[in-house]
Length: 47
Image 1: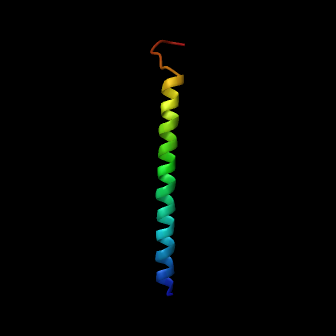
Image 2: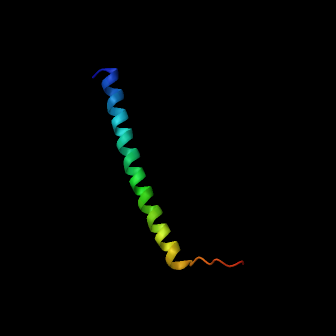
Image 3: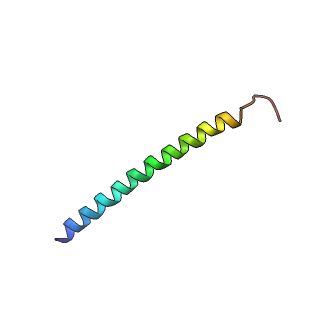
């Protein structure tokens, strides 16, 4: 395997991990956002 093939494989592997991480973070953000809306109602008044 040449150096460029190893690099491409590494880049593909890293890109896949980045996509997987992004999906996981988006899912967590949605869950946190949904939880905040249910447990902490927003008020327009002063505290």
